Image (tube, rainbow, N blue to C red; front, side, top):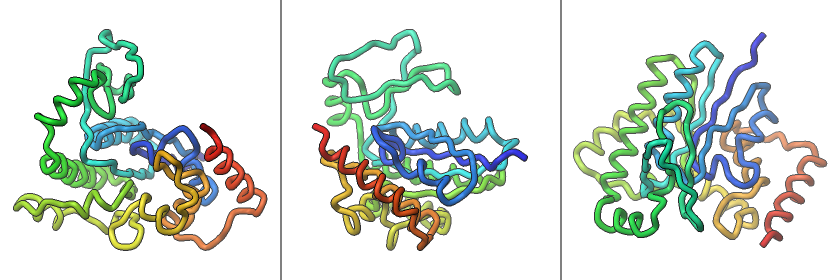
Length: 246
């Protein structure tokens, strides 16, 4: 019998230089887990990639976890044959096999173009509204195809800094927040770690493995069962090793 397939999507709080919460899902449920997270990606990328990957796996017993990223990011697309290696780049490039183009996550690869775009062409209010549309649209997609799903936030400031336009108010009313896994009242992984596991936040403000494990246990599975003591020690050692790295 084919195992349940669990797909996870999001930014660097989902997939980073070290293990994150998707790694520990198997500690609580027997399933095939594929982490589709992309560091620095915009919510447009998350929305688009989630739909594309789900459409390819409609024949599986499928569950999906989506963690939304900061709203101040944008996606840049170029033809595949235009990829260039840029020294000291502040963004990441990848080719998604679902689309016939190259995607830059985190902004434009040219620093000066990126600065110009942020200063003159990007509007945080507009991006927040777009994120609400992505959430609303993706929830409807899941309902249409009867896909089991949960949503999460990298940080509660996605919703805390909301802009109450007429459309935003309607979207807030229509979004099913019961399908979200929040920390406290509409807070995210960042607040969870800062409140409870401050020592397990890296210098570049990314949760370390032990904090990701606790998030998986407490927020995703609402469990009080600890992992074996030897595994806990491995996680704590792993966190210490990362903190000691320059």
